[in-house]
Amino acid sequence: MSNTDSTRLRIAIQKSGRLSDESQALLKGCGLKINLADRRLLSHVANMPIDLMLVRSSDIPGLVMDGICDLGIVGDNTLEEHELERVLKGESADYDKILSLKFGGCRLSIALPEEMEYTGVKSLDGLRLATTYPRLLNRFAEENGIKFEMCQLNGSVEVAPRVGLADGICDLVSTGATLEANGLKEVAEIYRSKAALIKRTDGLSDEKQTILNTLLPRIQGVLKARESKYIMLHAPKDKLNEVVALMPGTETPTVLPLAERDDRVAVHVVSTETFFWETMEQLTDLGCNSILVMPIEKMMG
Ligand code: ATP
Image (cartoon, rainbow, N blue to C red; front, side, top):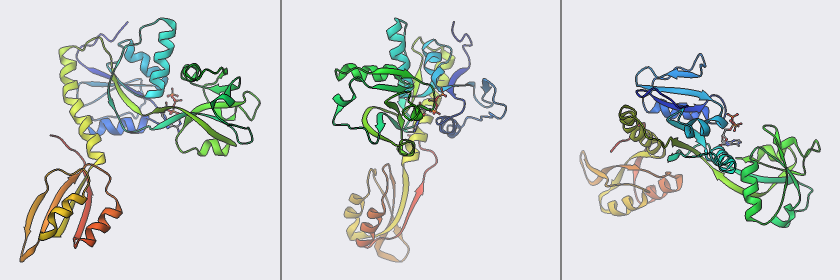
């Protein structure tokens, strides 16, 4: 079974959860008019031939691999776990990862009760671990020549040691606050994940490919704009090279004359890296003033 509509691009996104707001914001940033108020499974984008399928994160890899959806936004962790599961069952697990999306960052880590001794990976040998990601955990065990007893849970993994279900856990962590609140310490990071844009591999119709050709540069534009800043400042003319050298990730700056000032110029640049307070302080030390750092909404070309 696969998606037989050849004219509307179908994208699977998480219905609700950690990736859903960012996924929607990304697509809205690309100009898609999305109205998810009624929370239907399939939502039509009003101004482009695109449909959004709102599903659980764990369903997204399979929907794309089976061609039910053309694209999907999903965490690398969910994707790789599903891929390993299919490969173990001898099923097809094809997809193309077209972009890493720079949100939904987290790590899959093993955590043990604070009082438990840990001196290295071998301390984990023979433990019973609760996890939602048994295949990723198994791969780690095989790579390290150790064995775990596995207890698969789909939620509330962090309480498993406290209620006597397991010795420790293997779960997703971003800040570590949940682990700390449950008296657990992170001892081994086994996988790093971010959200990714994936595509089915069995070829898109010409109409869908055309929609994708429009959408992809927009997604890249939104991601690039998020990291970039437009910087304007006034600089002493004789320090121009030093000033430009201080600004990270900039291309050719625009240098403009200032009314009634021969010794100073206005400099405008797009910086594609984080712009730190320290850099602003160094610019002021060089004699710059009127320094403005502004967000950019969209970028292309
Ligand atoms: P489902 O939609 O199937 O219920 P889920 O239970 O994985 O999926 P969430 O907890 O919303 O749902 O997590 C979705 C994804 O968000 C994760 O798979 C992971 O890629 C990412 N993520 C980022 N930070 C974290 C974190 N601290 N804990 C859990 N997931 C995180």
